[in-house]
Image 1 (tube, helix red, strand yellow):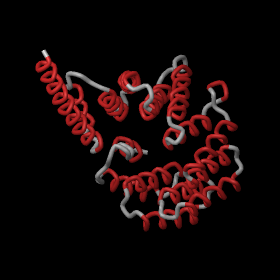
Image 2 (cartoon, helix red, strand yellow):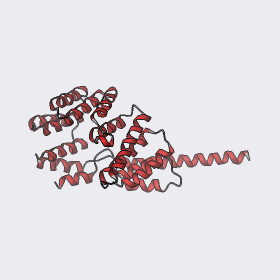
Image 3 (cartoon, helix red, strand yellow):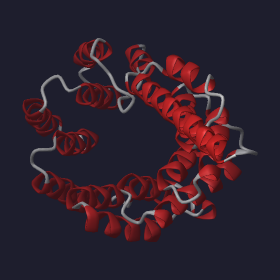
Image 4 (cartoon, helix red, strand yellow):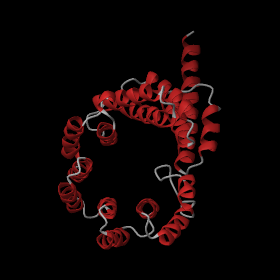
Amino acid sequence: MRVKFFALLSILAAFASAAGLEVERARNLYNSTDFDGSLRLLHALPVKDGPAYELIGRNYYMQRDYKQATEALEKALAADPANSGYALWLGRAFGRRAETSSLFTAPGYAAKTRQYFEKAVQLDPRNPDALNDLFEYYLEAPGFLGGGFDKAAATATRIAQLDPAEGHAAQARLAEKKKDFAAAEQSFRRAVESAPSQPGRLIELARFLLRRGRDREAEQCFAQAEKLAPNNPKLLYERAEAYIGNGRNRELARELLRRYVNSPLTADDPPRSDAAKLLQQ
């Protein structure tokens, strides 16, 4: 009996190791934006655990199938209720469902978005992505859905304790939302000063300056960002998106988007389909 027991343990250990390798292969496919390939590997697993369900959910999220994304991520969180990352992605998926659903169902999905963002922060108060997403929710959501400037300000303070540059950027977003444009500019510039090697901070400042009609200053920021990270796909996309949103430099925006579409992208970059939509505008 004892020999059979240890033999069973060895079989289970080998099975778990093989499943882990398959999940890792699926994660590599996800990171290279092969979401279909990643899902094929994951669905073929006879037994799925939290990491497998989480990755299934993220693949569906990237494919804009938010219903299946929430269903998979709910299973991931049920398998590991203390996982802040799972709660965060579940909140993101419900957020997309809120954005794409009817007026009748959107408030319920929005409430779940807030609840899971708050849960993610509760589970890990030092999770920067969870804090940033919760801040954005508080900033954009109306009061009857749990949003509010006071909550956003308190969350921005918590962000600043972990990352001063990100904290300044959050304060800038809050000030701009309140139409205190002088304070917003000051905070955007402080974010740049706090992280001079991060091109994204210059892009944030440039986009703000474009919104204020200060095109020449914005171009200087874009040029500085390009020097820091030439041909960075995300910067190509954000610069093009800023031009199109501002109604200026459309030819340059199209060129940037063509370069973006032909760049090697990861799952962290905006999808090529979004770039294609911008090219049509």
